[in-house]
Amino acid sequence: MCDICAKGSAILPYSEIRGTIRTSQGVEFPRWINVCGESFLLLKGVFPPDYFDSTGFFAESLPVLNDSRFLEVGAGCGAIAVLAAKWGSSLVVATDISRAAVANTRLNSKLHGVEDRVVACVADVADGISYKKSFDIVFWNFPWVLPEEEFKVQCMLDLSLFNIRYHGLEKFLVGLKERLAPRGRAFLGFGNSGDRTLLARLCREYGVEVEQKKSRQSKICGMYSYELLELFCQ
Image (cartoon, rainbow, N blue to C red; front, side, top):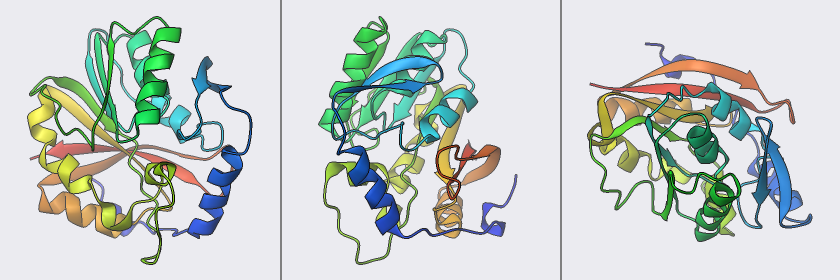
């Protein structure tokens, strides 16, 4: 396993990221976006994959298998959930704390004809999800941007990117093992604006080891880079 603490962190000014969010919300809605060659409808107030291209990177990097059961935390517009269903998953459970995101996921699952395999629900991480020892793949595009302490959440969309003290990660880690099938795999989306030391400490506390599987520089903005991490429960 690699030691993610050994790598440096690039804490980017949250004002720059918030400015990108503001710009993304000042254009036409709903609008069509492209992720991995597929078209999705994006609703206002939902994480915009056309301004942050982490969604496409994680979608193409995750190992989706035929007849697999897939849990996605923080589904946003539903692009990854829908692609998982189209690429072979027999059941996709997609959660998000945002009601707008859940509505967007349901809309896109219908537009792509996979609404019979995608279950979208409002949840904080995976609260209330009754499936136990069920999922072959669990994934969370974790909101890894760690802002300064004085940061104040201004809208629900902030929660898709910013995360003071990594709220929710402990809840995700403590319930991870009971959600995974016997040979299931868990993945976390991360990036260079995250706090690797804090992430590594929390994982150690819950007996979870971390290995970087893939990484890529953003094609939209070169100061961002993304990492797909695999989590191993002891």
